[in-house]
Every structure is written in C-alpha cells, then in structure tokens.
Amino acid sequence: GAVVSQHPSWVICKSGTSVKIECRSLDFQATTMFWYRQFPKQSLMLMATSNEGSKATYEQGVEKDKFLINHASLTLSTLTVTSAHPEDSSFYICSARPTGKNEKLFFGSGTQLSVL
Amino acid sequence: DAKTTQPNSMESNEEEPVHLPCNHSTISGTDYIHWYRQLPSQGPEYVIHGLTSNVNNRMASLAIAEDRKSSTLILHRATLRDAAVYYCILIQGAQKLVFGQGTRLTINP
Image (cartoon, rainbow over all chains, first blue to last red; front, side):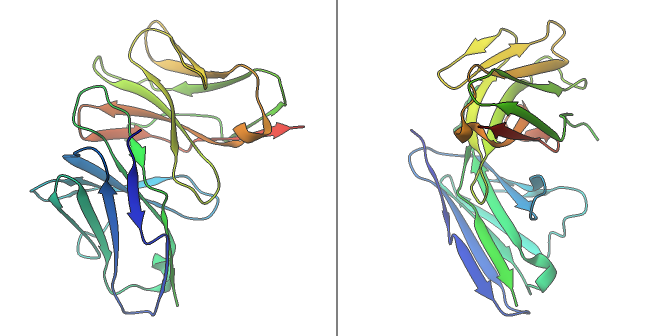
C-alpha cells in the first residue's frame, strides 16, 4: 500500500536553531500534503496545507514565518521550524493524499521535536 | 469554524461491539467522511471512509445517517489492539480537512 515517509522521527535541538522535517510520498504523487502538530495527550491540530508549486495555506494562528513549508515536487514537502524555542517542542505529523477524488490520507509516522 | 464533534472518550470491553459516533452537521454534498485512528507516538492510520452509503471493510463498518449529518464507526468485536484515539474527518475536495478532538477509546480486558 501507499506509504508516507517522514524524517527524522525525532530531533533534539538548541533554542534558536532551525529544524527541517521531510515528508515524502514513496509510491504516489501528492499535489497536496498536510502538516499537523500534536501536544502530549491532545488532539491533532492542522497547521497548514502544502501545495506543490505554490504557497502553503496556513491555519489561523499558525505563523507562516515561523513554520516554513516548501513543496517543490509532487513527492516531497518540508516543514522548517525556524528559530526554535522550547514551546515549539511537539510531535509533528504530515499526511499526503494521492491525486484523485476519493482517496484516503496516508500519514507519516511523526517527528518528535525537543527544543532545549 | 466547522468541525466534527465526537465524544472525548469511550470505554468498552474486549470482544464486544463498539459504536463511535461523530456529528458533522456542516457537511456538504461532496464531502467524504473518513475515519482514522492513532496509537500513542504514531501517525494516524486509515480505518474506513464513505460518502452516502454504509461501508464495510475488514477493520470496521461505517454507518452514515440519511441526512449525512452524522456517522458511526462500528468495531464489531473490539480487541485490546483497538485502543486508540479515533478521528472522524471530513475531506472537502482536494485541500480541505475538517476534524475535531477525536475519541479516546479504552478497551477493558
């Protein structure tokens, strides 16, 4: 079945540094990918919709300059957390959907970010 | 903002059926109803989806109300491995997702 690969699965960084998370669709093309954040014991929160070849659409309250999204190809979207701070520590997840009207979402396995 | 509404938590016993409800009163005619579940520290996995008719697969059944404003995910015989957070998600076209807080399902041995 279709697979979405997310890398890295965990990362620890110092405050003030930037971290890049990759989301790849391994055996299908995805014009659209989605990025989520999840705090411990809380629900998924949609952060942004990533569109191949164009700007991402951010949900209300998500800073686009803080969370940079690049979707340069039909199989890769990246989320860069810029100038990370401890409050950015969270579980970040991506999902992708094969092009087509009635396709399901495939989720990555998530990235646990810890900012010291 | 539009979202789906699910109970925060539910509990059931092993080998008994479980009915997980979801309200989506803002659904429009072309929105698909999807269900996913998430185990701790993992990405969600697909369970089932449908548009208007009830759907069955090896994991579960999906019962969709006639007016489509609600749906119910049915696990016919729950096992301990079914303990997870279940999300009901509306997918609108190619780019819009609508979902809520999910239901944390606990299965008692």
